Length: 80
Image (cartoon, rainbow, N blue to C red; front, side):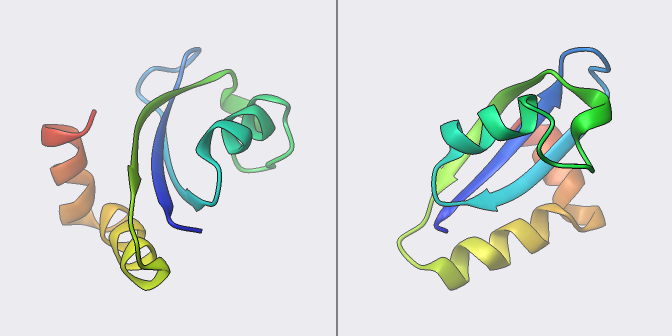
């Protein structure tokens, strides 16, 4: 699980989702298929950005950061 990804809802463009996975393209398909209860109500989703890390621990730390207040502001300025 070395990928951190950001999705944007096509139906509700102000809705974003940040996640951590091993294969972002496969995970996007799962989100769009409604396999995640948290994201199913805002589908379809588009992949906005994905970032690979060599270390799973660093990837998890970056995902946690992006889900924090300052991380959301950083993502809005630089990644979306």
